[in-house]
Image (tube, rainbow over all chains, first blue to last red):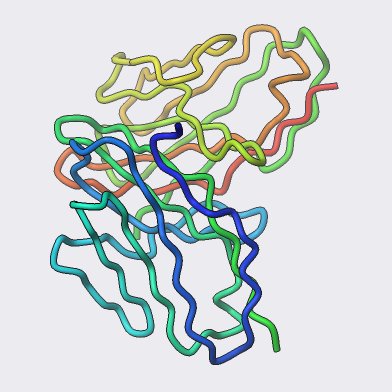
Length: 110
Length: 112
């Protein structure tokens, strides 16, 4: 079983739709969690950190469920420009190492 | 803004050649990383460095070496390139006091 798992998609949604992705992780010692966004043929860029209490940044909401060992990303009012691959990242305390999921591809359709 | 630059965006090399990929960051970050990204496999850590002249193996170090002679620069070396090293190579840096990694634009390497 992979340490961090994501549904690869693609998720095809119309503009204005709400879409949610989950990411499961296997190691309960996981400490920090992030969502990165990667556009086609570009580098990953930090979208948002994920805090225990959940956090929101505009149309984006991230949640952490430690009991079930998953994090989620909710995108409201999808825009064409949201089309990208969303990478889930997990880290452990005392290490610099990032564990990446393989990404979930989102296509927002006009 | 953090800036991480990589020496080449695209590179074509022949099997057996020695290949140097360079990465430079301008934020005085202590930690630097080299990953490769392949379809279906995601990003995999090759090597990382937490200080000048310090290095640690990542998950897939075989066939690679690294060099960090200056804090801002982290080089990845393919001693004898092979076709299975065709990939997208991404460099990242991170401050000692934070958990966010910043990535360079990547180098697409094709080994023929």
